[in-house]
Every structure is written in C-alpha cells, then in structure tokens.
Length: 98
Figure 1: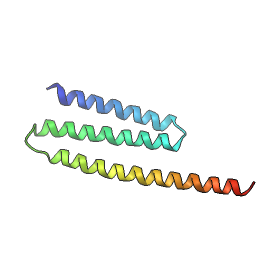
Figure 2: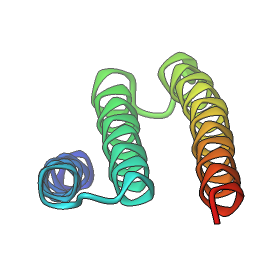
Figure 3: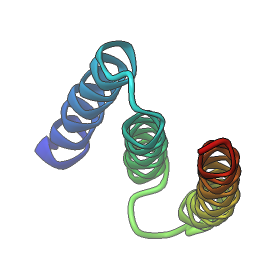
Figure 4: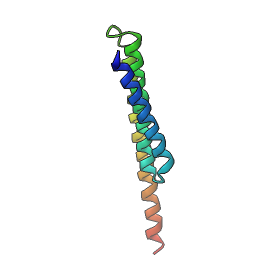
C-alpha cells in the first residue's frame, strides 16, 4: 500500500519545511504562511491515517480534516487582519510625526 506511505512522507517533508520557514523567516507574513503549511501537512497526515484505518468505507477522518482546515483558514484570516491593522497603525504614527 504505497498511497498512505507516500502521503505520510510528503506530510513529514512539508512539516519540516514549514518548521525551517518559521525558524529562518523574520517577516510575520512568511511566518503565517509557514504555519499554514504546518497545518496543511497535519491535515494530509490525518487523511492518510484515515485511509489506513478505513480504506474507502468511512469518511469521519476526512470530515474531521475538513473541519480542522476550516478553522485554520479562519485563523489565517484573523491573523492577517491583525497584521494589516498593526501595519496601518504603525504607518499612521510614523506619518504623523513628520
């Protein structure tokens, strides 16, 4: 059964790449993107484990993965909105002092 094994290796590789991205990047937006890549790799692992547990008969694990992904998307939007609000307030303070 090569499918779940390949998916788990891909998930581990993506997770390691995301950790390197979080450690090496100083930009907040790049850190958010790396964090989202971590969440996507975890969802890929959940889906692969679901395929190993019940091949083709049960969709509970995949439904859980969809729920996790929807929460991750909401978290990304809130984080991006906070980042934009912070950037706007810092620019407003900087332009007022000139």
